[in-house]
Structure formats: C-alpha cells, structure tokens
Length: 113
Image (cartoon, rainbow, N blue to C red; front, side, top):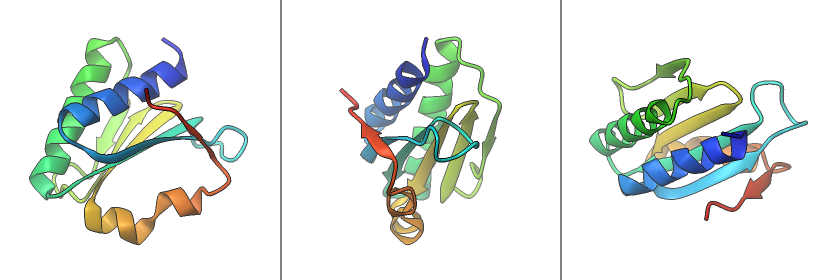
C-alpha cells in the first residue's frame, strides 16, 4: 500500500465515524516530519476519540504500522503516527484555532475520493 492509499484509508475510516472536513495535505518537500498529513475533526471529545479509534483500527487491519497515538485521553487533538502519514483528528474548536491548513498553505491537497 503506497502512502496516498494509507492517507485515503485514514480518511475513509474517519468518514465512517462522521468526521468533519477531512483533507489530505501533501507536504513532501515542505517538511521532514512526514509526506502526508490527514486532517479531520469531530464535534465532541467522544467523537474525536471514536474517529481516532476507527482510523487506528482500520490502518492496523490493513497492515499499516501505527507507531503511536498521542492526545487520545483528552480528545481535543489526537495525533496518529503512521510513519510518513500523520493523522490529526481535532475537536472542531482546536482545528479552527490551530488551522493547520493555513499553516501548511503551500501544501497541495490530495483528492480523497
């Protein structure tokens, strides 16, 4: 599975949990952190946790190694490290505040369908 497929799988899993505004940013050449960011949000802490669990489980079922999960207990900004694909699942308030899409404004978006 290539990295774009991993990112799209994360988006699909997030959408199954009713994630809001999922997007994939191609940050290759812009950062050494990863090649792709997946960004999505939920309306509550519980929904953020549910989305994170769904994404992590889907990735692992597909054989993708998940290196770690941060922020799950708080449910405000959960980061899932899948190597060169990093998934950010925000509570809607945090997503608006941190606005990663603007911060990484030079990144190309990848179609999620």
